Length: 398
Image (cartoon, rainbow, N blue to C red):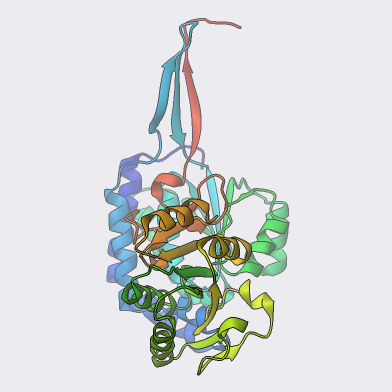
């Protein structure tokens, strides 16, 4: 759209949308049931993301209301100075223009990610997956009603009902302006977008997150962090897939027995590398490539390392650049780990499940970027902006 909506207009639309989601939740749930009944169920993580329940509806409403309460991210002065020739120079945040979100399975993205992009002053293009079509169409219809209620053009939110071929054509040669593309989904989707897009892409990469249990770990904390990361939500990109145990850990055998017992209680299958494959109840690692894989399943891989440096090297080699946690009472070891592990988020004695816009207090997220430009980690409202220079003079020429 050519004209930036005022912050009052944007907030009013978000509040209208929150009210509509609340009053029409049965319609959303009914459409989602059609999608769930039609889904093959081949992918446990995909099905988990597809499902909308009362809790997810409440999350959508909360996200919209919270967004409406936040300050305008556009037009914020980043810095200013007076040039030696008398010009006054400012740098301020600015909207991208048009943001396209391509995503699989998750109808909540149609609310929360679109809401963040809209609040940031952008026109929204939504390309959801066919598995969530019924849910998405109902939600987009609510967006249009929210816009109409506030005398705002419905073109600010547009749903692209494209198949794979048409999506590929649009990415290469869009028939309208696209300033930024955000793919939300698995590695195949992200690679497809990167290979075909003519616009800038924010990569929300694979998780494959690690927990390293240092030799000076509080093992109770370690158990809690690993279980929370592995079993809390297997479909989340911030879930734990790999656990590294320091060979010098006191009472290592007792710790491993307790860990394996707790994981088994939660139906988690455990694979172990060569140093640990004699443990009861584990399967031996058969393919080294599994160190690279994001499981999105009740499955974990455990291995042994001899030092902090070895743990760091292993994480930097195999992880997806997302999140990693060290469990240790040694602050110096934790500092080395956190400064050297090349991930978007690094933790000390805490769960990787906090790599999430809402959980970190950002009021939701558009995506979790594993790129280093322009923003790394959860992209909240204040991050979905570019910047612009404003220069005021009184006739200066070069």
